[in-house]
Image (tube, rainbow, N blue to C red; front, side):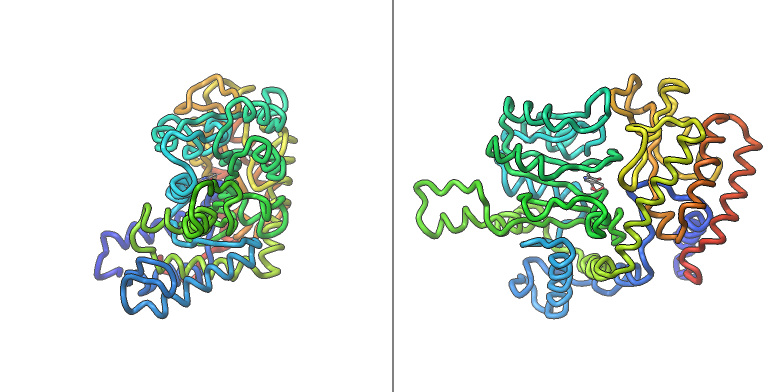
Length: 432
Ligand SMILES: *Cc1c(COP(=O)(O)O)cnc(C)c1O
């Protein structure tokens, strides 16, 4: 590639070097194995496979069928899921598919507010989810900054949503999926647990699982799960809310078939051909996640996040909920000034520490100039870093945050970061 397309190659090469020399603390990112990269960069990208294994609309799919079946079977084992669809292209289209499968336009979705940690696709006004469905949003308690399950219950009783979505992109504590299910049972709603951020922690046994009671569980595969950029949808075989009144036996069977509804919503409802190279990479990643090493990895992600949180707080930095139970930490910069998140993320990048700015609950500023910074430990843990490194990184971060304009300090830390990264090398011997 270096000679055939030097223009693209040089940027890919530079990106590899960037990843090798900075601390990647964006909690939705990770470093996949070389095996996952190999599958994702394979000739499987050449094949069209509309349909599902053994029921394709194109010939020549015998090998693709085996790969997709392996991905499904491994995901079932990993999570204890009844039915798995591995064809969703990414998290947002996967949520769209779930709504398409279970709701009619105008039905009501209840999800977590974006500015309190939810995802765009859980009903935010600019998203398709609010354009085609009614939405009602819950937040966190202003005092504890935690999900208040009784407040959520009251809202559900009042609003009677057709589906209740749990899951978050910026929530540092455990989510009680069982409590969400109980509320849904009370109001006759479906449940969707979007475990995109925490799927690796659930698989590794360090976060409570939404199985087996949740109707549908969606996850991206590229966050803590450490697979390729993609998603999957897991669900129960049977639709417990199916309305079969007046239907004949054949129609009633179709109405009760939750797995069939999800599959038909993905294809042909929303997508054409699946991305088979990514399906193969997912199968590889699920295989890796089934190992004992992955359980140790998931545990270490949480240990690292806790050590980092301690270090930051010990250095005078305020955290949303004063700590973390998972892979993620939200730094609350309000004590230093309103709307400092973006400036802080830029200053940290100048010190070789990559984060993203984020709203904090009840943020007095705007989403474009939020008052928080979101960080996490999945990538650092993939590199092999442990608690001593976290303590050091917490000190560096606190120093930068307290003196954001200090160029010499940021330069010095950037060099120290580079040195630390060289002791935890990634993708050695790779070209890009
Ligand atoms: C990342 C994420 C998504 C969306 O995934 P994309 O692949 O970026 O579309 C959906 N829900 C949650 C909770 C997420 O964290």
